Length: 399
Image: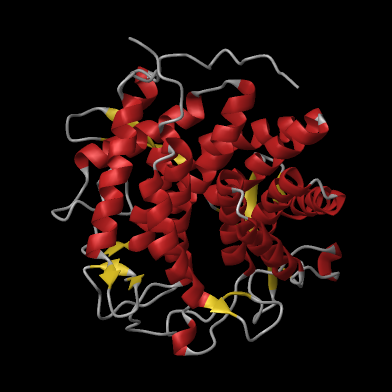
């Protein structure tokens, strides 16, 4: 199916981003060089040789408290290595680099370092098997449905590149685990955390929809398309703010909605809508994606005044969330040709790389550079591997 290219597709937007939104022919090489150099830096600086894994921050923060787990900030204070979520960013980044370049060195890094490290998080004790939030050498940890969503999507992408059955088998095994988190409360939906089944979150349901569509493409099994439609419909019904089509965070079992909004939730629903549209031809899915992209752009961007006095539009200070948003925006761009959203984020990332790296060559949480932290989170840097890799596929234009 084709749609009419929107008029904003190739506009120059100096009033928004301080420059022209068209891409220079050198950007592809430049973006890939950034990703490659950052990968080398991460593998060196965050390396925990004892375990063959990576640290949560660099420098290592002896007082680090992880606040993004269901257990709260007290779990595993002073941990030796990163939790699963930050580590998963390395898998996404290296898979993307292998996809965009075909360079065997990224496949070698994946198969000699990243994937063996990932298996230390594999819980083969509790069924259905899946990845838990911290390596098994430390005993049992909580298991999150969304963590396994992201990994299963990566395994689908890697299988598509390699055609090695083990990766498809892993993706299907993770799908089985993820949908063990589906229940009839609230009419369906997948919980966030297996051990604390108290809320059903956009971050567990939207990427599950994307996963189902990827598995359907790879296997042609109708059950995956059926689950994708069902999961998408449930998420849209329960978690979409129809005033702007941006997605809320979660709904508790008592029906109370947590109305926080994060870029990645809406980004995954954009990508899910595009994938469903491409497969079914139902334009409702495309219209949903376009409404959410527009609403997200208006909700999640704000102007920052730089040191040279220019006002520049930046996406919110959540790099990994933004990279997941970029997945949806790029998928939408490839269908409708509206380059505004992807180019704004690409320009944000290029600005961050050129202007906000610290003395170790690492990036922080705020792309505008106005807020800085001593300890650089692994995920804030790992996610940029994927972003710069994927940016390299945006069309180049001779100026």
